Image (cartoon, rainbow, N blue to C red; front, top):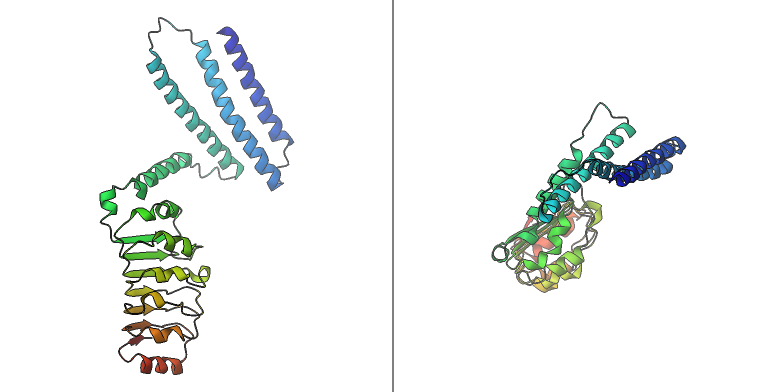
Length: 289
């Protein structure tokens, strides 16, 4: 035990020397060198915490120890968690000093991040009961959320979605529409929103035609310069909103939408002459300007 204490004590001292050498030899004005040095120091910090704990354990002579293997495992697991948190705490302190923000000693950030991650995991759709998945009729895919992929990964588990909202959030976001629509292929969709993607969406994939019961399609606030072909549901489509897009003409696809009752074209480049032409072509359709 004395040997173990000496070995771990020596290891801790060696780790401290390595950390000190990195601090002295690094050109901290070079971002790449500083990033590499910080990564090495954070790794050594975790090793130092482990070495110090082993040293402390070795120096404590057992006195009539009646601890069972199960008790020892629980104790070791708790100690490991404590070591991990201490390591994260040390790294957070180093980051604050590194960034020159000592006035804002936000040491709780690592713990907050773990709590948020645990909450997000609990709320993940993969943990929803299948009976609930069979009854939900509305699904929102918000690509601006960091956890959205968890929902996308289990989209096929939903069975009764009638309204699908795919959005880029407040400022737009990249999206793989083809993949998302493929995952939704078995939904009994009546309403589809693909909205607020701004410059990230300039076309609508042909998979939109896989939903033969669509009654309402909203494609506003994207970067569409033409209307997508919607031959798969022309007879059922009741409302179409193409607002806030650089589209300049709805022909030729608008001709087939004979059941259309509402058409939103606000903030587009469609001419007044074409709007009058559409009104003659679809007399029962209300055009919203």
